[in-house]
Amino acid sequence: MKPTILLIVLGLAFAACQETPKADMVIWGGNIYTAVGGQKAEAVAVTGDSIIYVGGKDGAEDMVGPETQVINLEGKTMTPGFIESHAHIMGVGYNLMNVDLMATTSYEELVAQVKKAADETPEGEWILGRGWHQDKWIKPAERMVDGFQTHHLLSEAVPNHPVFLSHASGHAGFANAKAMELAGITKDTKTPDGGDIFRDINGEPTGLFNETAQGLIRAAIPENTMEKQQRALELAVQACLELGITSFQNAGAGKDDIELFKQFAEEGKLKIRLYTMLSGHDQNLLEEYYDKGPEIGLGDNHLTVRSIKLYSDGALGSRGAWLLEEYSDMPGVFGHNVTPMEEIEKVTNEGLAAGFQICTHAIGDRGNQEVLDIYEAALKNNPEKAKDSRFRIEHAQHLDLADIPRFAELGVIAAMQAIHMSSDRPWAINRLGEKRIVDGAYVWQKLLQSGAKVINGTDAPVEPLAPLPSFYASVTRKTLKGTPEGGYEADQKMTREQALVSYTLDAAYGAFEEDIKGSIEVGKLADFTVFDKDIMTIDEKNILDTQVMMTIVGGEVLFEK
Image (cartoon, rainbow, N blue to C red; front, side):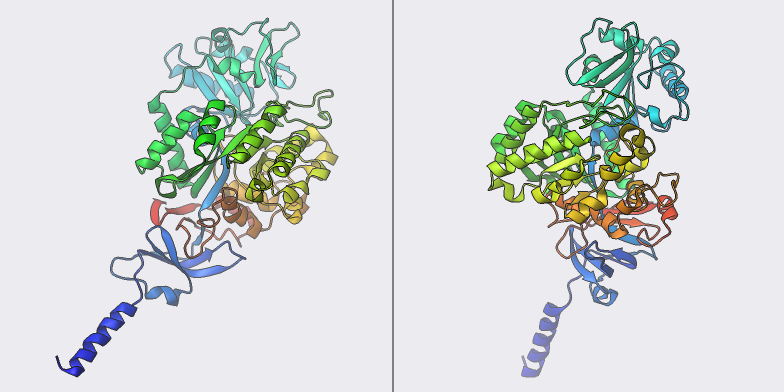
């Protein structure tokens, strides 16, 4: 070969080696928020399931080849994939299969909805539902005991089907006469520790079972079939994708659910990324995981099991939240400690030693204080494991002023759900009184300014799974009807950047996953949510009208509107 021709061939070969690699996917043409220091980008490129480029459009153009999928946002807005940091995935699925009572505005409406379901259900089969909340009804029930309706109207309308309807909070349940009959509930039934059987002046059960007392009814409900379990998970995963949720932190799971999650992950059916907590009530399950340790990144980063869920108290709506001082609207009532603190202390120490994150439900100020005390002692006793424990308190709704700075001091994450403020604040002031509300209820900014991490979510199916109402509540402190003007305790509003980070990068931190997701950066997983409006700049009233247009997980478009 002549020297000149050889040089040309070598030059072409060198140029070919230097050619910009082609991406599998390139996205541009809209507002791209990275969740890193308020930065935006013009374009993002993806190869496989990971981000390979974030920057200007010019830099991405050379990455477009004949096989590259180019997504023009056409002015829409893209953020890192939203992360639901506290919800119940099987509950979400079952809620889609059972009677959804979230929108009911009266006891009569609840009864009508259950009767309709009964008319379509073979006699004798259980009717299950969830979502009712007596404080949100536009009028109280005609017959009430201790602030709750009695079963009589429901039992008269639906006499031949056992019915059990979970309160929106999940911390109370309502049964009709048939359900109580099958569960063997009578005037003489003993009230279990950590719960209440509400009774009338004659001592007869009213149908309301609070906290641990729900177990008396649930023991009589047939277990779900494998087909129902699979269908519930399928429905929940699809709901997440349609709402722009790419990752889901599941607040508690038993052995059967975990096996189902693993099956879905192995079969490629777990389309979202699931981080699940072990149920702290199942000692056998805990012992099994103490022996083998956390399971991280199963199914190509679709399933992780590395935390434990515990419960210190109940919910504010059912007066089960554990308070330092009595309820303002019910003297002498302080709420419930639903799991003995000695048990929480034991699991906290054992879990920490075995490498597990501890996530404890605490809503009332005493519940939070007791958990912080246990965490502090455990971290002090095991300084090596304490270096990156990332213990969490789930909800952290109502805090004593002295306990607010302890979150940052101990490195405890506040896993809060802004939508709870929107839903609960109008009636919560009756439970706690103005001073306790102002000092320590839903105090996002106080926690953030102290240096604590606050992560966001919905607690679905307690609240609807959609992230945007919770994002709206974060930045407005208003109800979803837009009241009051200026918002409740407006000094506690999040900025839009704080709200975005609470749903993305900090939420990823809450699951030890900030190195692989939560922001749009090179090397991270290509998980994105696309909205039709710019949620970072539009008028706040338009946030609730914003639609999810596309959900991308691992560089694959899994939902498109």
